[in-house]
Image (cartoon, rainbow, N blue to C red; front, side):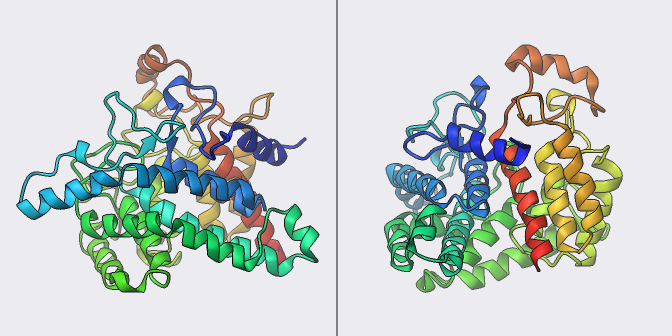
Length: 379
């Protein structure tokens, strides 16, 4: 069994019966389902043709959001009264496998996962429809996990309550400083997070036409252009002009900007110059486990290069990711070599143990890059 098949098998084996995914089945701190990690994992299943498993995950998110719906009502009331909106009032970025909030201290106010959820549902619907169109007959359609066209519409109708309230939540609070996808910088606004919000909202504009989505998307994009650019490229956070590999989100998958936008080209040049040592690191000052290279970000950079037609560079990055798998075919969260801050590694090992392995998000992005390369060959 090759790494691609092992990755699909690992993700499906790790999925709980209710649809949720632990971020890492073997790392105690990650026994939660993050909307961000989980949605990209479900997206990987969709690109691999495993639509039923992906749908099960989205139904789990739907139930989790409705379970905590009261928090949105409380936020709206406090905002109406002009009261301070403290981070604990907002929806959490992660839930226990059964959909409950965690109780330990965490940077829970993160908007990117909710935008990613909206985007992921839309991608699931598109890819399920495409599977139906290419299926030879009903038996083939059932085999690859697709449902009939009416089933997809019923699925979207089923999820509509959580989709609508998530859109309203993001429209209301996208301007609020919140933690980024690395669960840091809670007092800042991050272009990568705004890209996720933008991408998710854009996908909902036709489904929910009464919510004035497109003008807000234009406002979000204009904000990033105005406040998220310095020295001719995009920046990690507003007023923090360093580079971060999560800025790849502005192109893939959230399409806030074109891959050949000169600001994006310069951003990728900075990622290559400052963050790429074979694999891709998160950002220059990263001290988490010493600041190793992340397979998932390396796959993401490969995805970007496919968007600009550089298959050779994408293949090089894919080969690096594959080389990081252990003998069990597991990909880690990060690789402890060429660390940016080697002196910081052991404090994290003492705190949490060795870096998470396997990380489902790493396997997901590997699947995505493999499939994107295959889709490019077919075009």
